[in-house]
Length: 111
Image (tube, rainbow, N blue to C red; front, side, top):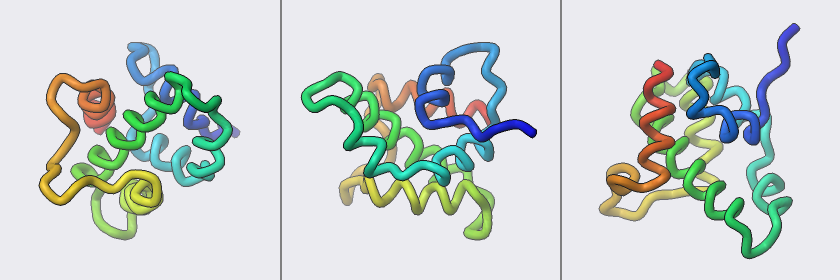
């Protein structure tokens, strides 16, 4: 039986051409992660905290744009991520040319 990848696995392998995780598998990993604990476990004042924020933003928008309805894992993962990241009122996706935008593109390619 295969194990669900961790959030760290996803972040480390998202741009790896050999990584064949689907968006549904990524959603399952997000749902199996206590996001508050994952963030709190990162060293303060570290690049890892910034990277975590970029990943949460990318996941939020990917799940928002690509879920197949409210009874899917992608929708549940979107709700789970929104506990950590909620966009501003005029935001409609990651800023162009940002790390979050590159992560978003890598995520939506997995549909």
